[in-house]
Amino acid sequence: MLGGTQAAKGFCYVESEVRNKIVREVIDFIKAHQWLFDQVLRVDISQADELTLELIDLIVSILSKVWPYEEQDDLGFVPSLFGMMRVLFSLDANLFNVLAYQEP
Image (tube, rainbow, N blue to C red; front, side, top):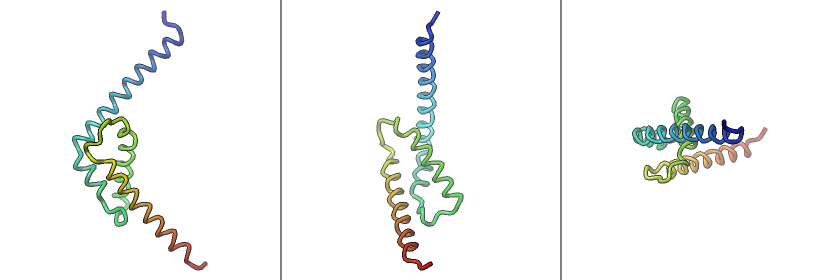
């Protein structure tokens, strides 16, 4: 009979294996649909409508959850994400400057 500690270790191992399998499947899905992810990550976020912003949010969420487990970035998603962040932060800075100079 397994002790409590051994059973917990066994459960953690199984849970880790399931998580790894799910992560691999999601990464395989991303690789199979690279064109879609690329297309969404290249959208001009300053001109995006609400539906497009939701799609961007979904894709960024998916990538941020599983991409750290991918050893290589041969698909170029990391530079695309940083490019999107640069644009987003510059938009935020411009908005802040406009709001700061408005009189109440």
